[in-house]
Length: 139
Length: 334
Image 1 (cartoon, rainbow over the protein chains, first blue to last red):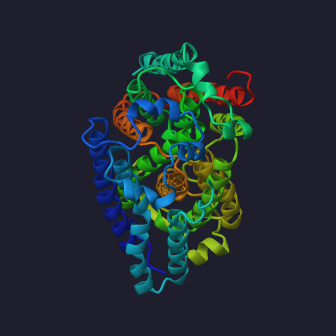
Image 2: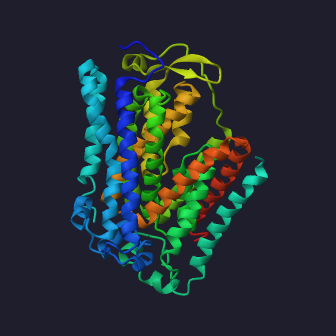
Image 3: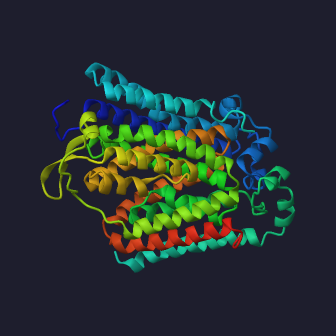
């Protein structure tokens, strides 16, 4: 066990650094892509003026009505104004996994077995959630 | 700043909520649009939410203004943006509750991601305290999100309304302890090293802390994570009392670790909503930018205001939104 100090640990500081960089890049991407969307620079898959008749639907009905792909299927539509926004959304949502992957080697070096296991389990949980496996077939 | 100076903010939220509800109610195409709802939605017991003939751009604009005000109120009231966002936007805007919860999770996630680095660097948010809790809460949040997206909207609204009223009660009665007395750490927290030291500037001392009742708290986080995923609320309202009162972490450590914890819990649930198609950029981006800008202003106002008075204003607002969600779910106030 490390000696306690008021200073944040090495892994905590690395986590903070990556989180900070990733968050601001993700937010910037989100705002820029949204501008490309609403300004019409990139043509959306679903015309914007049709959205009010769609956002009242349950998500599964909306996907079905517009024949939209589930899971990572949005990647094939990322050249369109509405789906390009998912790049920023995915960056923000994927940041935690990146941070965990970065601090895992520190726990390994410190031979902190409990936290190695916890980091690996957390990575697996998040990757499973992100993979779309859990939501597949829910049409 | 006195309470009456913040009153316009409160009234602005109410006015915009009334505007949103009114625009929907007076829409001449509402009935026709409602008829276009898919039969599958009706078969599933969905509340028929009519589409609006209001120009599309009005909604993101109003959403931005409302979330900007909510961002200010969230900081002043000491609550997360997600817990205000979901019941208020879900209750007074035409969006389906699936998309509201998806946006709510991303709003809470973005706030946690933005606050996390500073809290970790200052050693107020503790990675060693958060990681064991995060494993439990994030797995439970996935379960909550999957169940929540499978349930019909009227049932979700009813459960959400009940949950919000429960949260209001917790906010109103729960006490907080700056430095809880923890005579001895439990075996699990001691083995995992869930302890630390931080500099408490208000008393000019280094404060050493450790926690107890860890197994009981971890079980509680199953429920908290599930609710966070199901309702898209974020979970600061529950994380803080559990970390502070049950586990005995100092209040500052509890608040900071809770905020950081949301960045992990909400991530897992957010992926489920993304993969299920319950994320609409037209809702997410104006809400996210609005609430973050509002939070920045809120932090500045906080220095000059009396948080206790504002806290009660937020509680009343939340209670109103909770009752609205409950009545909407029960079909009494559609």
